[in-house]
Amino acid sequence: MNKRMQIVLVLAVLVSLCLALNLFGQAAKMANAKAPDKIVFEAKTGKVTFDHAKHLEREKNDCKACHDKIFPQSKAPLNFAAGMHKTAEAKKASCAACHVAGGKAFETKGNCNKCHVKA
Image (cartoon, rainbow, N blue to C red; front, top):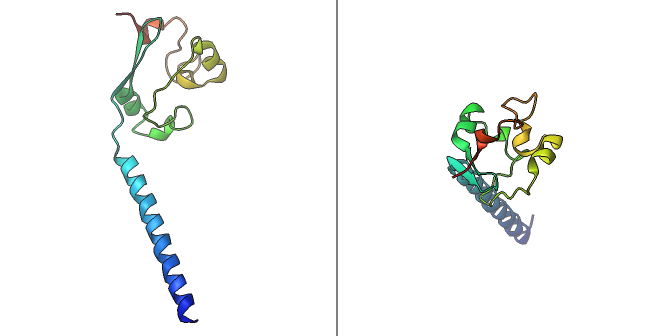
């Protein structure tokens, strides 16, 4: 192997190592990021306070129970359109992934005041 080829090979290994370390650093940062304890959603029928800490506890600290298959794991605001209940229940999406008849949490029908609180 000539000298030029050795230099190219060493540079390729160094670049690969730098990329791997960068990805590892980003993953470590995400793992150490603290999720909010509560998230408040504005709604015409009353504010909905999502108790993230309680839901996380119920799922035995398994973030993958909800993220990213039900909710994106992001700091971007979640914007749900009006009338989301029927759509979400039909698709078993959003809150209705669990909060639906036969789901693992109370169903939304007839339980509005459990989530929606008017000030």
